[in-house]
Length: 71
Image (cartoon, rainbow, N blue to C red; front, side, top):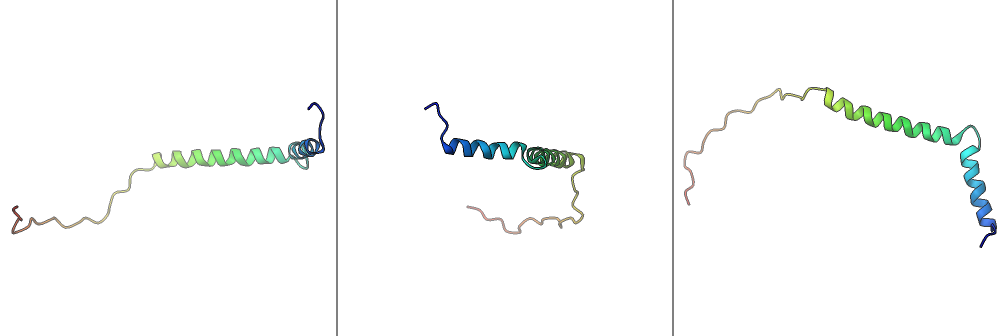
């Protein structure tokens, strides 16, 4: 129980490579996540800024039935 097995070392190496390896992979992942969150918030904000769409065509008036059904 207090020693590291080869699996522990492999997992540790993978985590270190993701965090510190090649051209800041972690910073690019976090930057992409931040851009996604910002785009989501902008999308929500745009829905409230636009006025509701008014229908251009109107339906003809409804005529009442000539013989109502009585039960």
